[in-house]
Image (cartoon, rainbow over all chains, first blue to last red; front, side):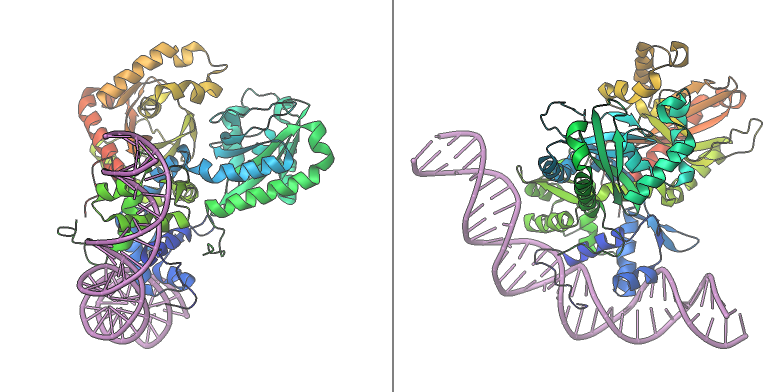
Length: 263
Length: 263
DNA sequence: GATTTCGTTGCGATAATCGCAACGCCGGTT
DNA sequence: AACCGGCGTTGCGATTATCGCAACGAAATC
């Protein structure tokens, strides 16, 4: 063993290390060499080489023959989509939403980015004066709503126009505001860490949303949606809870670089 | 079994089996119990249980506490998206497209489903009379084009209306034809196994596309796009090649149910 | 052209894994 | 109710796959 890596008994070390190798790939570092990763994971070169070869054989990784470095492979694409579609996610997300819903007394949603739009993935409805019931699976245009802002504010700025292009044709400026205004709102959201929408659809409905990241990119957002009268007075406290919930999910969807999973 | 499973030296058995466990999940069978999988993979219950526990600890699987069965977990979502974004995929796809492009003398594209649309993922341009140059990253409405038909013809029929809803509002019937006609075309595509579009965008451009599957769902499609004068005379031969290329990619993105990966 | 760094492979000691068996538990059946 | 079958889980010893070291050739760097 290296040092403190006591595996909690019943965990297969070799398989676990293979998962650590996969988790090492992020948006900022999408490719790794063998020695590279060996140092980072504090494992022997030979071990990492064999792990990566094993992963590559099943197309979980692919080796760029030119650079001899590895990238995430096609096998993960299909699995990722299947994971997204199935309700394994809701098993993880729902408890978090339930907590948030209970703490705030309002409905909560988990939305995931989908092209330039976002899709309602998991929803917890809180019976209240304005029953805002979200339809799981429904697609929303990305440029609107607190959820949309919380997601796309963290996209690379140059990708935004292409993503929104299909929606923006034919949309009036009144619907989405000018590009410049959208960019300004995104800057605000990035600074605060969460987005607030005051009744873009319905004046009495307020949304508060925070981004969920995975491996360095925005994956989706957690939102509280409820009556303006309820939410406005305690906006700061609620925003804090929303951000906390989103951060908790970020941990589950892919640990941020440098923070190993707890034992 | 232990007799014939000679691992090709340099492959870590335990890690490899963990990948086999992941690959066992499909659209048709999105959840598995321990004994269930143990039988299917011909491994001991205890071994599979430890594998799944290891995967679950890193959130690659999640256990439904009620049923005690496992589903694909959130960690795969982030990885899948990252794999889709990075160009590890093109490392695998490009050689296939190059072959197809060389064999047909036309441009080839690999498109992936994205919401109700599809996005150009990898493109190989063949210089010709009509240089049809595809922009990687570009989004197209799902109801059009051979690529779109090859993809969405294999979607569950009940999902189609919701997926296309945002595009269909404001679109004229002339653009997409009636719903009934679309459904009829999809039936054709499913029967043949590939889709042909005769100049929907440009009368001189013909597209031939076949679906790529992963774990039981359509992931995207491979298409040949070229001058009608070239393609029409040899449509059958080209379609056969397109289907072969798509099937080859299906193998790499996730082996279809029942067909284990070769050693 | 020298030198470092890389990815890969061989091999023996070692520790992790494997398979068996037993356990407690739940759900359906008798 | 008692029974039974199947489930997921755990302990444990023999075995075997794994690990770390060292060496190798090739490629990149200076």
